[in-house]
Length: 81
Image (cartoon, rainbow, N blue to C red; front, side):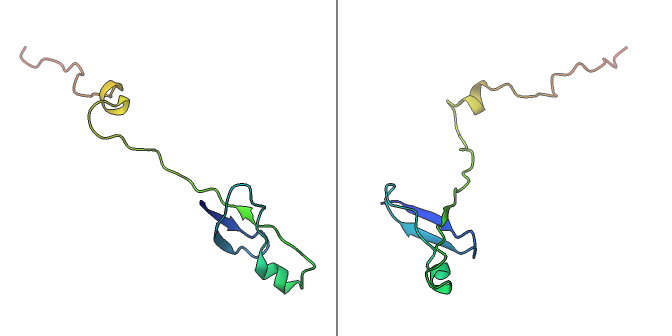
């Protein structure tokens, strides 16, 4: 089963929970205990940000086929005359 990160919207408590995808949304036990079970707060799932993969080596679009800006190909005036 995967590990998901949840955050309580009222007390901002962050908790990692091991559960299946079909399981109901967990309830913040701190808020339930503080309100004596009157106010039940469902936690919200936190989506993690992932970075862009880095392709290193030959055979990838980023390294082989993408056009690069070369400033070495500029026409320089000939100073021989």
